[in-house]
Length: 446
Image (cartoon, rainbow, N blue to C red; front, side, top):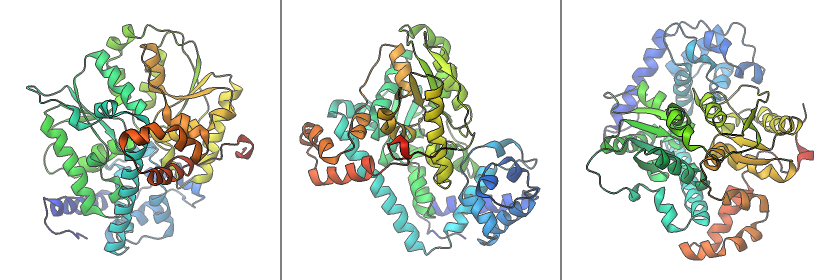
């Protein structure tokens, strides 16, 4: 199964992945508990039965790369809901098991094809992050979100704040995170952007060697700070670090990893006295359950804001963020549209998303609904008297490439960006990234 030559320990990492796959295969009894706990087979219309046949098919995929269409469909459509995480009596993490299965399935493609897919995805992401962040922030604010902004320290920072890559397309969220950490007196080193990728874009198409190099280098940088905690914004980065990497450790990880809202909720006693500005709004969350502890933490944080009333919506309880439902596009669209309709019916004044990728979709619909659409960090910031304008939303709502270019002309000049490249990114990463049409009349109705 191993494919890499020994460069910077990559072969060791791949061998450990192979060993983990073998260990899962040996431990799994194909009891089907993980299949029964998972919403995906039912959503796909799979004949799951008690789940044992599908689970046995996944074991076959891990052994040979082939386990039948039903098992492959389940593995490829895994949306990370997490219902499976506590059901295996053998102590297997089924999300890791399915990630290993997807890797085996991807490896049936030629190596050059896999590498090209990973490279193309990384280049597209890097271009989008580079251009969109610069359309919104001047250099001095860009620097706050850059690893280069950290002065040399005599002592380790309290935490590494890991933005991931794509959060920088909506950089006002990152600036609010740093402002809140500053108010708490937490020292931090910031890492993120393409140079500090988690390797997921290479891992998905099966370019395991380059994925190993990417995440390994990133985590080595974290370790060199001496921080005891890495606090992540992105749920995919967190899963890569806390599930894939910890499943195949070369040595004990020198830091703990947790999501930002969980970290902030643990410091709520210190944060609450600072949240003195009332936010007199009825607020609902657009939520996904798959990132452990995150939704409970966000609700605790919003519940501490004076004047804010949190309104519960009925959610289908699948996925860990919006993009995790890309393999289930009809459900994804119904979930988004259903959130909007429920929020309107319950008279909310603000609909808050949790993650950056969700935000990029949700804000495009604000003009169609009688409430504002924000990220939850904007509400926390408002309660602390902190604001950063959401320039991505401003651009997204324009819905016209020429209008966006005209509005951004000063930032294009300031950063020396190429206007044609900017136009291409606007078309692909702003106007082209749309799961539901903005016109609510075109939304699915259950």
